[in-house]
Image 1: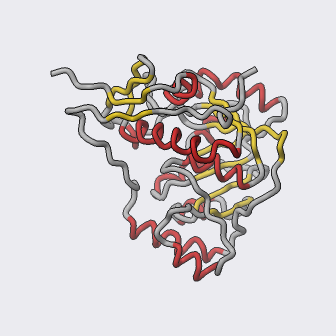
Image 2: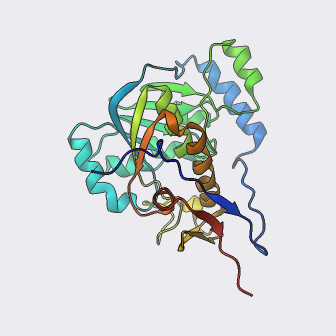
Length: 282
């Protein structure tokens, strides 16, 4: 059985900037004014908000993300699903699972861009949809006849809109810049404590996703070294890996998680040493 317990031994990673590799700066992938407009429209829909729930200490949740190892580890995920373990999906992993015999128990979305509505056109009645208030209104329109909850990002610059709409009655979800990192904290808020993550790679292994996602084709790639092993990553992958380490060091005591596959994230967990960009050879 895959060992749980990242919370008990969070990886301690030293990050070094090696010349002449430039500093990597990651920001939001949508115009800030568009995000603000999305939030302003979505919070007026009258949807229930995600709220804290009591912890279910023994409940295990499988979180299916879109990394390339989802292909290799899918048989294990499918078996767990058949055994009654709830599967939570994000973005394109929803359709990937649906087409291969898994009906997700829940779906989480963070991204603000309009094209994301294509990920959930095939909705089903037993799935719960947790959509960020910053998502494009077209996403909410797709799931308007389903079980939908709205949630808000901690650290967002638009809390004035939330306070105007909800007063003090809202519960922002902390986490990093990606849906994977936010989903862990969102599910923890909902009372879940033990997670098994599939497709959480933060690197390229032949492909950048387990499925086609043309929006990420042609992105620049860098080499990242962890304990002597090299990984190909985009800037976003590298940034997510750094945020994951920081997240676990700060909040890991509040949950147990295990990462399946042989991607960058699982390697960092197994080898808490040095995460660095490979120095260029001139």
